[in-house]
Length: 184
Image (cartoon, rainbow, N blue to C red; front, side):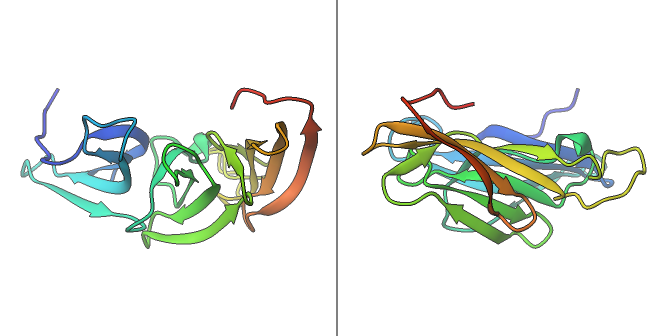
């Protein structure tokens, strides 16, 4: 095991990591690290650890936006992924939408917001059967759906929202569940 000291980097959640030849880690870094439930800033970051030189670098992805609780196409874990799907954690700790981030450019590919008074938990990516699975079957990495449970605070109801991951548009909903459901 080898340790790297990366000042100011508290990786709260790691979304993926791979070798190329540096170790690349895509994570949400929390600042300040001792204030998890107050004024938290969740910075989506790319951290590179050079095993040869012992040096590191850190690049902030999507500057200025709190991005936490997310996923990638899990069939590609441990290999380079292009997209991550993360909850837009604003106002903290509520999540007002889900963002699709292009990890290569570090920019937002798309954002889907739920609307006034509607908040979610962690999104889950579900690949289509034709999506890249690591078996060489082809397909696009973002061929699939992002599934999230959304709570409407005013109505006191919840719905399961299914987004087309490529377009980040609603593909289906299981609407008006009669009460709040735990986030999945």
